[in-house]
Amino acid sequence: MNQTNYQKELEKILDKLSEEPKKLFLHSCCAPCSSYCLEYLCKYFAITVFYYNPNISAESEYRKRVEEQKRLIAAYNEEKKGYPIEVIEGDYEPARFFEIAKGYESCPEGGERCERCFDLRLRETAVRAREGRYDYFGTTLTISPLKNAAKLNEIGQALGAEYGVEWLPSDFKKKNGYQRSIELSARYDLYRQDYCGCAFSKAERRGEQV
Image 1 (tube, rainbow, N blue to C red):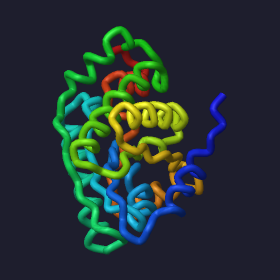
Image 2 (cartoon, one colour):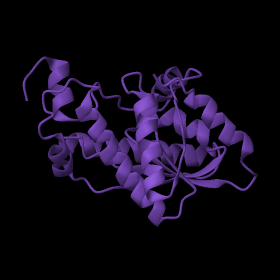
Image 3 (tube, one colour):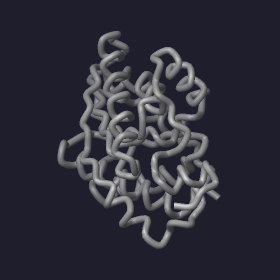
Image 4 (spheres, rainbow, N blue to C red):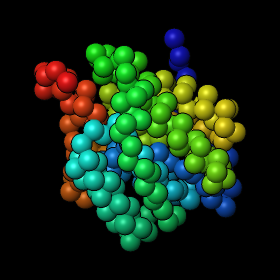
């Protein structure tokens, strides 16, 4: 069983950073989850948020979430919480998600379908991070109590080795990170969804069949 404390691993990296900010390419699943992560990290990194979530099945839901992400970042930049934050919106391509989900439709949330989804999103993040010559890449997904932080870090580390970009370890739910995200969501009146975004998660929450 993996006993690595990824929050402590992150803190070791932060302690060694020089005054010149490193470039971080940070995958974000949504504005609420990113709220604490960005508040925490923008004091250390020049962050580019990469909004890439092909798992979101309904385009209207996707658009709603991405606009909330941009609104939050604009607010943070206006308040000068740290280094300026940029945002890149990835392509909306749900067909890629349904392709990797084939044969795993009946998996419960948190199972192998989710792991394949993590790999899809983080792989695209790693590719873009390499192309942009970023120092690190990471994800906000580890803030969720419903997401397996150890698995996310395992996937991220493997992709970092594959693509030659340093993975930023994290477990953002630690140090009351998840609670802080709830507080920030309320402060900025952010839309908080009750499912990850995919049709399978939505159906499972509602006790329905896809």
